[in-house]
Image (spheres, one colour):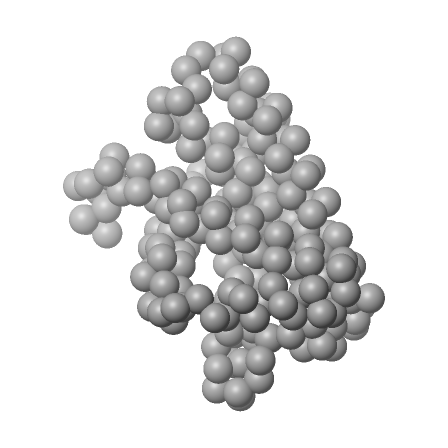
Length: 206
């Protein structure tokens, strides 16, 4: 990892940026798409079909989703490995958030890997189309609903809290007042996105 040490500043900037764009944008799109399930199977299937009909979708997914996601994930897990978690010694709010950011990184990684296999890679090999019926068969089972809900919480927290640290590392929020305001915004964002994501899961499980 000598390369990372030599270009640590630039790589950390790119790491935080990919967490926001395009990964964060993809997360928001995913949550919004799932929320269409509240309108019934037909509304959800139409939304998914419209997404699947985007020209050059496979290349878009590889270039703008898979590659940035792989970069962000591999580097993020490396940072988790290096992190010195001292939450038991220093029990203050931001230290807890730092610790949870690392924990949710691992949980989100496992969740995304599982979801990508079942909903994208496995589907491609099996020739199964993503539909309301497909997701309903999964989420109507209590155990899988809980797994998806935990994955949702982890992903949304990681994104919301990551947005807070992004604003600091990119010099957007300078000073305690600006950072406190951003913290409030990110907390509200976490609540809103969790509500949207949970509603989508409930709609798909109904």
